[in-house]
Image (cartoon, rainbow, N blue to C red; front, side):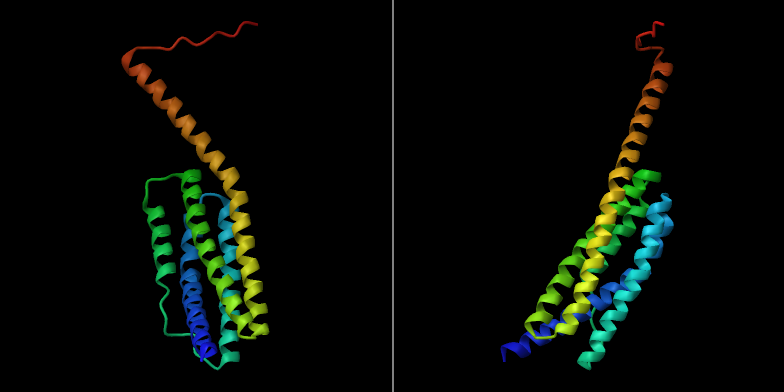
Amino acid sequence: MAETGLRELYIDELKDLYNAENQLVKALPKLAKASSSDELREGFNEHLEQTKGHVQRLEQIFDMLGESPKGKKCAGMEGLIEEGSEVTEEDFKDSTLDAALIGAAQRVEHYEIAAYGTARAFAETLGESEHASLLAATLEEEKDADRKLTELASQINQQAYAADEDIEEESEEVGERKTGTHKMRPRRVA
């Protein structure tokens, strides 16, 4: 009896993942289009292709189970994608927008890492070693995507910070010209 309940939970989790991945297939091109960084855009496009592979792996598992992958809406992914979409509507520019997109994408990756880890554990407990292997492969790809986003974030966050500093300096200079006040700056002596 307990195994039947866990099997149903496992199938429910897989349906949730299937819907989540399909939502992501639609969302990733929008994130790529919003990116100003070529490297980030390329990363989103690469992950789109991986995500299509994740959908295929899940379909393979459903075929083995003799179950349909349809019938479940992943509200968690829907919310994460909606938040990511809101970022693109903000007034962020260039590297600051890219930094926000990375944050949204990493929230998605962490959600997927948790979900795939759970599904893999269920598969192992249920003795579905082939399923567990397929889920583990996807889990590793999700972790790798998160690592790549972290690496990109370190450089893009620095670019966004430098842009903020430039804006702040320009703003101070404009304010000085308007008020006629000038800060004394040390002269260079040769």
